Image (cartoon, rainbow, N blue to C red; front, side, top):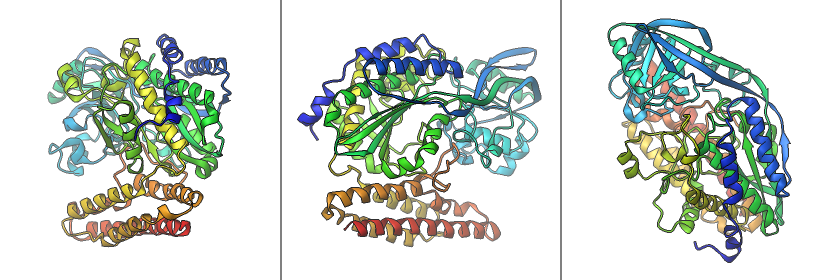
Length: 578
């Protein structure tokens, strides 16, 4: 829809000077050690207060893993390496025989734990990979991510060497624990050393593995609980001030991290300035937060906030919006935009209203970013922002990365000031502002739960087809169709009841689509399939007839019961509103 006159008042207010000043400042300030992150937060707070914007600064203790150094010694050569955060510290070294695994190239940055997805046809069974990996150090192309690390450890590997795709080595993280650990999480802390090496060195190590050679991995990390600052700006609405949109991004970065995520921090700063200046025009409130512990704590900052303010988020937060890597060099496409189905049309419209000729495609967000709110059940959109067109990326020979607008400087020392682009940043800031404004100011919350039902129906059909006749998801399909039919009558409800229903639907439908854990807990940091309690239906043909398949069918029966209960609750929410 075209930008209204009231919206234009906000959009036209966006300027580059204040945010670009923060980008330039952060381009000379590494922000990965705890003390450096706090200094970065202080610099941000100074700018907010300089604009007269009130800001509350929390200072919780969160669990962090700070990587310092790593190396791989093999064949008389010591290779440079980086340890992902949360890898097991072994400064004295761990030595073992090298074994090579061949990854599916399309899964290089996948957080999937499925063997077929990760290895294609190179590994046929868990038994085969256990026999190969057990007691050895694995060298494999890709990134040492949480899913892969947890699998190598589970299969008995004593170390992991991830061979990055290019000449640079990328920082990362390897724990499946989401946020600071609790007693139930702690057992999933990685118990093996993990390192990343560049591709030329990795090729030599893989060749050595083919020859039956061995290697010694050394990793140096510091772990513990650190006091970290979390600034939060609350801009009050004038009609429903208790209700709010949450907009957020991480301030900690690897080295100076300009494209990931100084540009995002600057975007949030400018949103705070514009919304504060025109707060008289806001219906609902807007909260803006900057997180520590994104990489070194696996989203520990946003998870702390989710835990500490869970009841307020549950009762009053109408949506969460993540801001990561906007305004990067050459990032003029929106073909990899992330949003939940109920937010997809809102997200695409905001992009097209700022960039009419934009290439836009909306996809399901992965289990990544600071999406620490799924278990509460918040409508969500954006994660990474604009990105490089695929044709340009191919022309430059760039491999796939998870930020910086597809610039391969992502998570390296090369993510410097030249990765940011003033004009693209201006565009992305306007897109963020307009989309947030349309949630804050909509008379009726702009969430299309019928579109979510369509997604559910497509997922159910896909699982049934993959089951090869072994799964009957007819009850799930019928319940979803009934919910979709009921939603059509919601438009007749009074606005107040309609909005309450739209918010309550999120608390039911988001968790059933994105989580396995109970509400107010956090799922592990690896891929959650759509409608996860039904996902085993697609795997039934892989289980041998008899005991294993019967157990899988029992799991599906229980999972479908959970799904049916959620849809029944959603139907009751809609009925109560009408």
